[in-house]
Structures are given as structure tokens and as C-alpha cells.
Length: 384
Image (cartoon, rainbow, N blue to C red):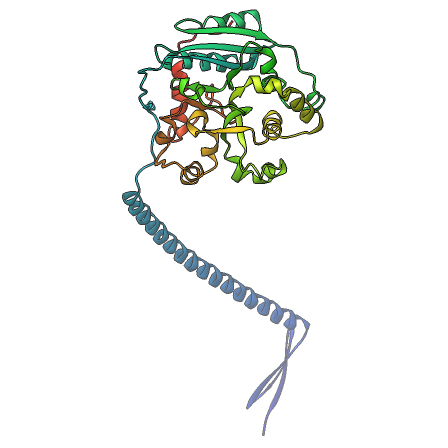
């Protein structure tokens, strides 16, 4: 038989039954249970967070271990590669040019250049290099067509005469052709259209851009047979890496595009066939990326002879196309850049990168060519 006792306690009504115990809680008791429950949940959350942190630290430690191992493997691979592969070549040396045989070389070369105030230094270097590398019995007559050149600059050009070299300065008027009035096309570059008119006394002339170095005697090039041709020039490699532009000119039948930076020109035939009018007409009716070069390529048609690469050795294309591809295109057996440039008669800086003031690493072959250019630039007196 159970005995029931009733007693009170502030906040708690309790009925105690011997043999069993039962509590009846009021409002205050409910809050306490809620608080205890909340505290318990907080500890659970804390425990979960701590667990996450521990797992994260373990994962991070594992990642670090793997990363260290990966770096060690890469270092080992690079070490092995360094043992198998030679270090990058330095071009901090003078290019050894192919020796030339001057025995029996005795002739006169008439050469034309065009320039303005911006290209005066390049023009002087071109003439100076030709003067320094010609055979003793060779004679060079340079005709320099100028646009907006000062009297002091003209004097600087004429000062290069001597030792079998003459320099004649021919000031020109500004060209007024429709398609170059408001474009970026250089009006100076189009002076080459008028070479035959500027030199009526000559039947043949060797035209060269101003950004060239003459590294061997020019008589061999100058004696090239161009009978029945407007000119002779070197094939331009853009035939295969700018093919879309070349095909636009409809040159498929001829099969190549030539570089107009060096041209042995038949002035007699050019005058007889009034090639100047055709060049002007083409320029007035066609806007082309390479205005004068495109015009010559189209207008002369198939009346052009091909010169070997050494007569216009362009540096530009070796910066974009690998050496074996270029060698195959020109039918050469080049093993290195020295093989390309050592036998060059004319080295042509045919890109926007020019040797004057350009900074290049010693591991770039252009550095070797730049050293060569400065060899002929440094002795020249500064322009006024």
C-alpha cells in the first residue's frame, strides 16, 4: 500500500510516492530544461566545429606532403633535363662572315636608296657597311633619293664618299597618290616607284632599303642577268605563313611573292613599258597592307627573276618560323643561325624591330645581328 505525502517547494510542486517518484514541474522548471538543452546543443556544435578543424588540418597536412613531394619530383626532373639538354645559347659574339674571294672582282655597281630624316642613321650605316666590305677594285655609285632631309643631313651622306665610293643626293617632292593621302602608308617608301625617272642615265640599278647591311661585295649580285625582266628579287617567306594575303593578289601562277627591299631593277625596260603609270594606277585603285611591295608584285607579273636568299637575307621571318621550315623553303641546309647570316651579301632588318636602340636578350640571335650593325654605326659622327 502506497503512502502519499504532499509538500511544496518554491517553484516545484512535488508529490512523492513511496515505491515510485513523480515530479510535476511548473513554468520555471521548463525554462531550466530549455537552458540545459541549449547548453547541450552548444557543446555539440563546438564538438562538431572542432572535428571539422581537425579534419581540415589533417587534409592540409596531407596536401603539404604531396606538394613537397611533387616539387621534389619536378626538381629531380629539371635536374635530369638540364643534364640532357644544353643551356640556352648566348649570341654575345661577333658573327664570322664567310670569307670572300676578291680575285678578279673589278666592276662598278650603281645602287639606289631612299630615305627621310627618320632613316638617316640607317642609310648612313648601309652605305658605310658597303664601303667597308667591298673588294678593293670595286667601285660603288650611290644615289640617295631623299624626302624632307636637311642640308646638314645631306652633307652627312656626301661625307661617306671616298675609297671608290661616290654619293649623290637627289631631293624629291612629296608624292601625291590618292590612296596614301590619309593613311599610315609611308610616302617615302613609294619613292622607289620613281627610281627609273630619277636616274634616266642608267639602264640598271640595285635598289636597297635603308635598313640593310652590305656584308660582301655587290658585284656578283649586280651581274645577275635580268634581260627581258623588270627586276630580280628574293622570294618572301610570307608565301606560306601569310598565304591568304598573297593569294588575294592572284599570284598563284607565278608561285611566289617577292620582297621589294632589295631589287635589281632593269630601268630601261621599266621606262620602255611605262611601269611607273601601272604602279601609280594600281596604288590609286587598291589599298593594300604592303602598298609598294604589293604593287610591284602584281604589276611586274612574271617578268621577274629570283635571287638567292643571301642577296636579301631577312631576319624577320626567323622570329616567327622555325629554322628547319625556312631551310626547306629556300632549299638550304642551315643548321644554325650562323649558317644563315654568315654568307649574306645583304642583311635586311625587315621587321619593325630595328637594331638602333633595341634591347634584346643575349640568348636571341638578333643580339648577334645588332652587334654587327653597331660595328658600322659606332664610327660614324653624330648627326647635327
